[in-house]
Length: 329
Image (tube, rainbow, N blue to C red; front, side, top):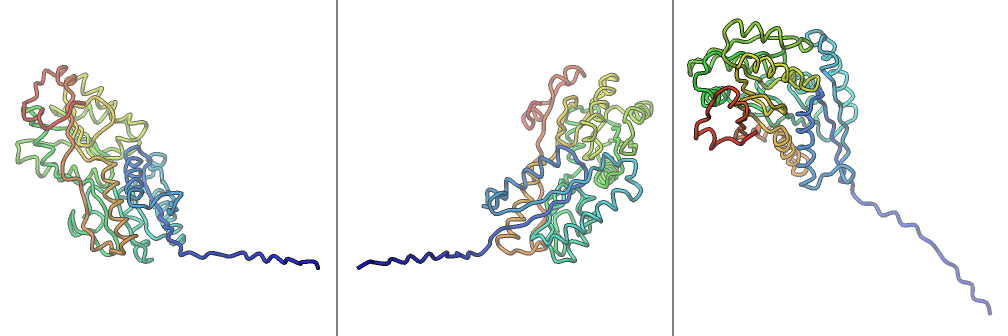
């Protein structure tokens, strides 16, 4: 008797719930500091179990403001932001990260009105994008700010060089930089400091306005938070350091600028600011917290560096108090 063995093969489809997250990123200005913020954002997500290639799909849109610097006051970049934000909304992500003030300011209404949570990073002055204050979020959005009180920077400048009285400040039409210049001018008078500023186009060289400020009597220069200084491989900052050194004038970098040449550096850590935005994104994605219920975060402690080689060239001797608070560059 033959035994007939019939084998039934069942293909079982195991259906599991999908926990994948989809994030879209909109960034204006292609500079290294924003790469640091983006990487900080990703690292914070990964610490909390949200990792690209695992359960995260992320698309990053970078609008290069340097390439269109001459069009900044026109409509070129604004149209690119509007077009890109429409594509982002059509993609229906779970969350949008915006990097920079322009990226946030000119896309947020479309994104928020579509019901998509928005988290910003690298916005230096939250009220410029509609926040009630530097710590209060708005409906549908929150983020991490670069904001630091300019008065603290002025105090540090005088700690580094006590006879500082007239600071030259060259900035572009970057919203953050304009707001910083205006607030610095208002507050510096408390310390007996006058701030003379020059606004330039994003494609303009820095040497001509620097020479004008030197002729006007500045005794130092300051570098503000401004994407302008990140363009052309940070060439504008290098040129400012060169002309300042030629005239034996100190430069105070109120951003942790990569290039050497400043007497003092003080400012936020962009990677850390990105991590703070990542913390908020995790709460929104994993805990269901509404963006407006999360306060705007910022770096509480300034990172301060001094350059003893530059000090020696300028004949400056740092106080013990400054050396205790600062690291050597």
